Image (cartoon, rainbow over all chains, first blue to last red; front, side, top):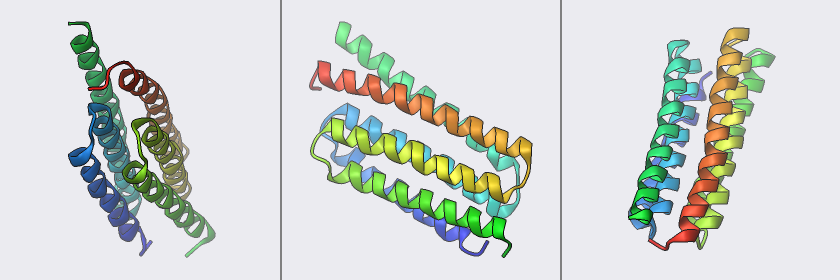
Amino acid sequence: MIVLPFIATLLLLTALVGLIRILRGPTTADRMLAAQLIGTSGVAILLVMGVASGNRALFDVALVFAILAAIALTTFLATARLERQS
Amino acid sequence: MSWAELLGVGLMGLGAVFFVAGTVGILRFPDVFSRLHAVTKADNLGLGLVAAGTGIMTADGFVAAKLALVWLLIAVSGAIGGHLIARHALRDKT
């Protein structure tokens, strides 16, 4: 149980490193990939902290965060489709 | 440290390793499609292991079902999103 915050910190570092890809990514698809990876590592952080703190509400927060990541993905795809058609 | 906690923490560590591998993959790979491969790997397997570890440590059936739902949602949205992102990247080189 001691090592859980370290795992959460490691996941946070992976999310921060993903920002580099957002900064450097040549195409919008790269940026969306990095955003999806950051969203998923956010969900993983919530799960780990939910166990570490014993607070079970964090699992619901992780579920909502997963749904938001899916919505962000569909929004990007919808706007990309509109740009291509116009 | 009971066996359940040890196994749970081990699974979470393994999931974190897959996340690190996915992040290194998204930075180092040359083009969009190989990066896509890295991201969906880290998504599905990393989160799957973390969710399994979490489910084992909170020995509750309802929580385990909720975690399975979270993992299923991320897996499905990752797969479908990955496919659509690849098609978008293939069509136009914006």
